[in-house]
Image 1 (spheres, rainbow, N blue to C red):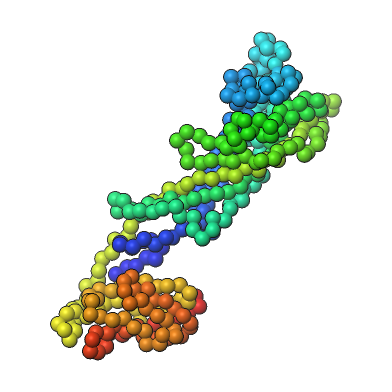
Image 2 (cartoon, rainbow, N blue to C red):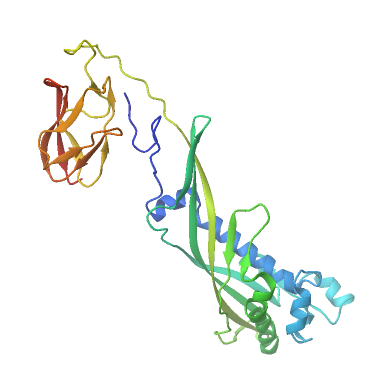
Length: 331
């Protein structure tokens, strides 16, 4: 019989869950989380800067008329010919989307931190159609930098203060600091406090000795939470062909299914022992109780207590039926 501890055997549910950041990344990579967060932040900013956006009127109640001239729905030809009083703002998530396009707002990721879920991030598990299905809770913190760039210090300050308004005074009224999407299982929580810290800096535009590009960056730390679905096939167990040897009462001798002679049992970890042909009149004992103990009722758990060697005994009312030596080790 083949026993694979990493997957739940038939009739048992082993709560195997990610025990490290590396295992979590196998289920949901960090670039996927960052992509979702950056897209949600981009849509949130666009809902203020786009004249048909959901929160445009809210921005109009807290921003100056000068700030409302920055919009995202115009093309550059429309800005020059049809809407001379409005200025096209390029809103992007990647550097390649923002080449030589000013004014602009660029969303840059600065790292991701997985938050410890405590003892167990497993939300629930079940068996269905021969597969083991589980839901895992994922919680992490993403740091972003929202960079504003224009061709003048005044425009950079004005557009930068719009960003502060969006994630400061206006965020509670707009979304109650929570971003989500229909039919999605993720939630983004915006910070309680957001303010402009970095000063505007200027750099020379490449290929132009006179024109200066002014930039200002704002740091935004958000919490990301979601539920991950995991599905694994349940392994099939085929019992080995073993000769049936009769005991004193006429029945076959009990057989150990997942324990062999002198097998090492890790100290501090209960070990589930499975049997074949074990009957109600059989009693389980350990020859040295100071080394390990065995539960008297199923599931039969071998509880290591200290390093050493002992025998696992199967008894009936009159004599010893079978015995098997085992060892308790540190690892």
